[in-house]
Length: 538
Image (cartoon, rainbow, N blue to C red; front, side, top):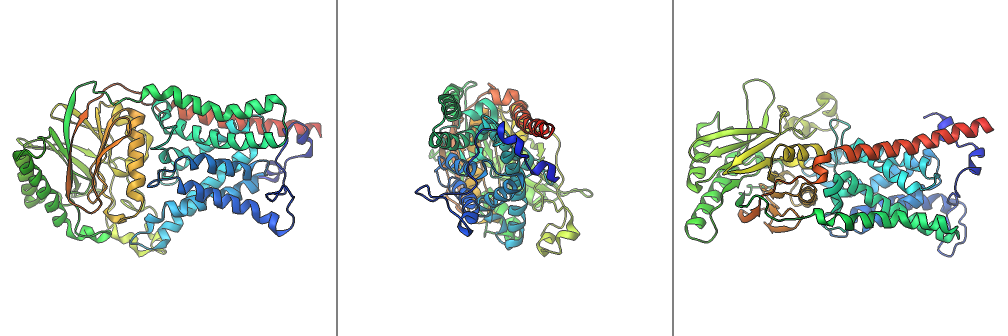
């Protein structure tokens, strides 16, 4: 970025609202000088990131997110673009390093540090924009919209994006959650950011003894998201619109955690088959109701049943014994081309029928971009000997008359993957997953929180079968009504509501996000116009 963009001319000051003082103060209001002043803002930037992390699952401290954004807003307000970038980078590292530590499980710190750094750089670009708009009237609105632009960028780039860490995904237990049904995760994240930036601005204007109009506007930026969340509450419902179904999710467990669980693929398959046979026995004994359908996790059969008759026989026997349709997570190995991470609808009478190929393939996990270059830093890339290829179409299985939409593991983080499945007719969402690679880290709880947000966003029951836990049944209002322990073979059986009504978030699709992106662009455009006018005046 050129210096003409970074450096704000003095003439602009007469048009801008009062900026926060450049020199920080201590608790008594005394202006800090020297090295201490230079360290306060970086320390607060890192601290705001750590505070945001502490508010994420498995902890239920959702209210820390607005406070973290309030601190970040104070750090960024009135800053130049370069400072905004650097402070945002520190905030991103403070947040993402602890949030994503599970990505180094079993492979060492290099992938973890690389991913967290790349994502933090994108956060820095976001806060650069927030710093630019922070001198505008009603800057919390513009700044929150720019924050959503940053989340949209991280969800799409690089290598297809990594949406982990959206503000929305920390709000599964939060007051603002109903907004997911109104405008999806972008609106939910926007509300959290607006409340946080508005809190800072309200405090700043109060300390500066502002005019009544300025104080009222600052208070409005806090009150607006709170009022919108209250207004959106009627959109949250778990009533059965199309009757109910009895669903079962099977967690077979794995021989051991980490990447080496793949070396015992047959043991994993046997575990899930045996737990399904036990479920059938429990049904016969009257201990649990008979399910209408069963869902196995992703990678529950890493042995291709189309190529291996023995694996076919094990699955077919388990499905025939339980006597209902079962969705099987498998890896298909075609003679040529990429592997397929596939869910197979297995009928007790017809055998394997419909399939769904995972569409969002995890970079550096299921496929290795720039393999030769990445190998310089870590030989673990060769664990993925053959890349997986993405599917193209949503997968909605007709399971005993219920439309069960497949959203496989990593896909739950992507708005379009979940939404397209519901738009394709899913009455229930299933998120078959495999978290065994990440052991007992927080990853499984972070993903479970995403699933809860998706339940409210689209008003659907979400079934979460996981190889090693935590498997769960989530009602359309986001409540977890049943869940397993980690690394325990188990099965959950629950009566669930079938729903077909589409929430505004489902119907509107990406329009709320596009609207917020336009709002952020308008704020940045306003900054550019002001600077051009100031230059001409000078």
